[in-house]
Length: 67
Image (cartoon, rainbow, N blue to C red; front, side, top):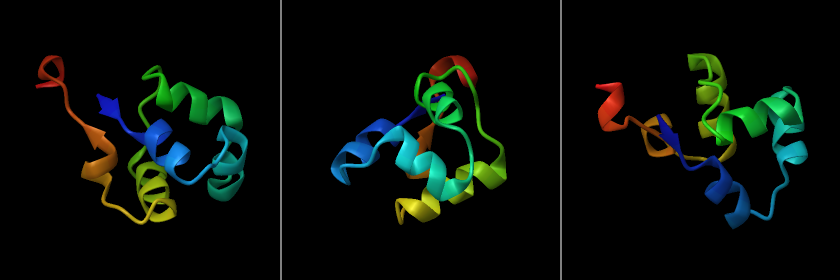
């Protein structure tokens, strides 16, 4: 699964630590999500979408291998 979290953070000049603080997770969790090493829960994905004022399916997209 691909995600655009790093891009969304850059648009808002937000650090991984700043985003992590907003959604109450560690900076390492944000790093793992951005690098594709961790797939967030539905709740975490919804929190991320809320912070970026977007939809979950705009932050996360399936890759061909995921189908």
